[in-house]
Amino acid sequence: RRAGLRSARAAERPRPAPEDPRPPLPPAATRRLAMLLTDCQGGPSAGRRGTAPDLMELLPQWLAAANAHGYAPPPAALPALLDTARGRTDLRPAALRFAGPRGLWLARFNPDWRFALRATPGSASALPDPSDREAVRRLWQEGLFAERVALLTALRSRTPAAARELLASTWATERAEDRLMFLDSLRSRLGPDDEPFLEQALADRSRNVRATAAELLSALPGSALAERMAVRAGACVALDRTGEAPAIVVEAPHECDAGMERDGVVAKAPAGRGERSWWLGQLVEAAPLATWSRRLGGRTPGEIVALPVADGWQGELHAAWCRAAVRQRDPAWARALLGEPSAPEAGGPGAVSLAERATLLATLDAGERAAWVAGFIEKHGLSEAFQLLGVCAVPWAPPLGRAVVDALNIARDAGSYPWSFSGVMGLAERCLDPAEASRLEALLAIPDEPQDASPGAGGYWAEAFQRLVITLRLRAAMLRELAPPENPASPGNSGMREGPAPTEDQASPENSGTPESPAPTEDHVPPEDRTLPEG
Image (cartoon, rainbow, N blue to C red; front, side, top):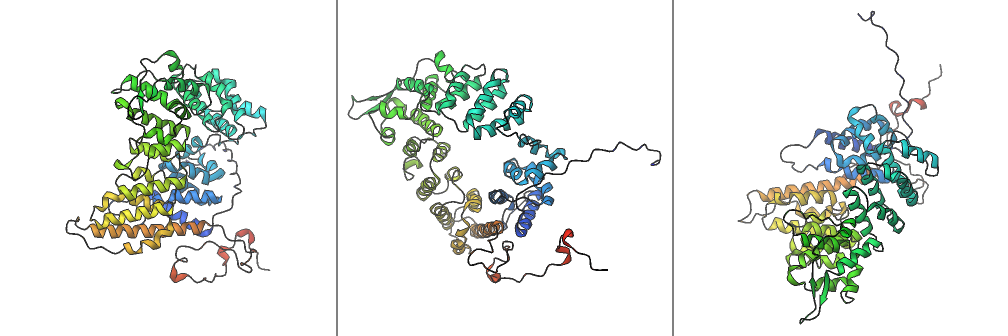
């Protein structure tokens, strides 16, 4: 039967994988990557974790550190890396960046890895040089949608004006959903020069395109749309000095006219929401925040937020100011609306929900954000802090890390349910500074349980703290393994041979001495470096 078959036409050989100019991973980091990928592919283990660290949650940090150092992955790890990224969409950007050109080359041979080609627009062929106008024009007119998005994004990051002009050249012929995606790319390096194009987009046939253009224009405080919104919002909010103390009075708009709709105001209110309050919120949200100091007697944001608001409009007005502070990235207004972290009811006057407080915190710098959340935890504990912790930079600043550990210790001593704090404990494993491990030694013992404590809670707490310490030490070892070897020619290192970062076992106290390196065997010598014996 085999002899009777006609030979098939030979398939074309695949082109070789492109070269990856990045330096290879250190050997210890290569072994660690294999261990992390193996654990991720095994899936989450059922039942109690005990003191074992959750390696699946450490892989994102490992990838971020490897990308920061600019390492290339070992080719043998690419299949497992792509399989892991396929199952976890949150890992894809970092995993595909680490996989590099060889990972994208390999993804073309397996249908299960097509997400890599979709997630990396233009990966099949390199984007043209921005200075090559003919190549840029040809790709923009003939390329796939993903390639055109990649081209527009790349141009926007380098020459915003060229990207905007390219988009304007075909704007009238694009589909509505494509116009929306392309318009979204203008968020990067948004500036006053974009205003004329965005003003034209306010007359677009698509409501979503009009709304996005209006949002972008309202983020430009000097734009004509922002000024129009300031006039409308100023007509609705005023200062009343007739009473014993100044107060803010609100007169919400009675209709949504065509001009308001053109500027992005949605006329139809959601179910359960009053139309007038809905329109008011949109006007205040889009008005420049500098408007209110002029409108309300030259007061600062803190003084404005402290003013009473008549007729129950305070919640609506402050919520709109919250959204405006986030959209316009105004830290002064964000501080005023957040209030002091120790304020009653765990929030400032304008932060009506934890989600809004979290978005306001994101407008502050990392240090101020961490200090505010630390103060919040010290006053109110951890029960409401989970969302706030999620916006803090990693690793947590020392004051925030100490506040979290102290709050966990207080909860343990109070006999609280340890599983009620499993989410915060998981965040601490990923976000606490590894240097805090030594400070946690005193929490590893099983505490004496109060009479009203949950049965077995002490053992669970001790186990959770042991897992936290082990995870922190593992993260420290991962960072050491990824650190590039020091330059042997640098002062203080003369005569020292470059080598891989110490493994976790080598870094332990009992192995603190410098181990002798074994002589390389024949198996460890690359084939091209071997020489045949004479004869």
